[in-house]
Image (cartoon, rainbow, N blue to C red; front, side):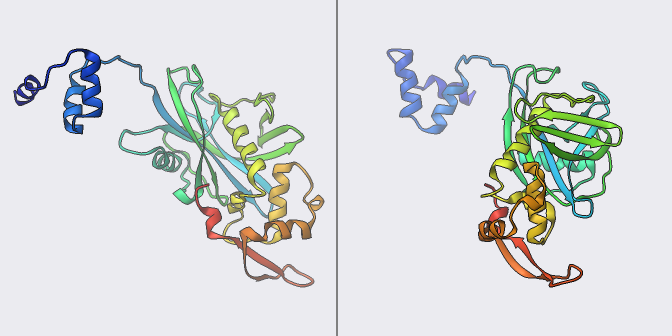
Length: 284
């Protein structure tokens, strides 16, 4: 009743254009919102919103770069391998959603410091269930034990190996091969949805940024040697780490590192150990 009375008291206008101008530019925000609620507005379809995350780790003993995939328990793409992720709740940001989904589906705990937003994928028909837009994330962690949950039937660490312009993901009998230029999947096994595009986007992002934003070295844990850092960089370049000159690499990267001590490495002098400067862990 009160709202109707207020609407009756609203001023009259010579035209709809004049009315629109008044409420958008001259009235108070409260008056504008009351007026706006009464307008006949176009009805737009609304997409569903999801998150997906590319999680990378590095096993020092195996000298192996890895990424985390789940086997889907339900349709669509039931029994296909996919990235961890899911639908965003109305009371959470995409960042909080991807942290929650990762924990629910894989048992892995990540924090806001370990994630960065990668890209928004919105191609029509990317999801057979309807109009679904996904915000993808990238995370670098140490290798952790896994526990499948929620929509995940299985969860595994897949080895990531670059061979020229091909990226191969393998775990036991499963082989997924992706073209780093086209995102085309050419191996015997394929990924759900457009997750091949998301993984290729993530891998290329790291490759193109690591020399000036080496956040990827978070995969080495709290500290690392120059040689360990060279090995990680080599995985993304697809080369033997020994082809990356130790002295030149150290000179270029020390601006991002803090020296924190030494570590025995068998015979000979101990190796200096470093950690990433705090600024490198910030959102970039």
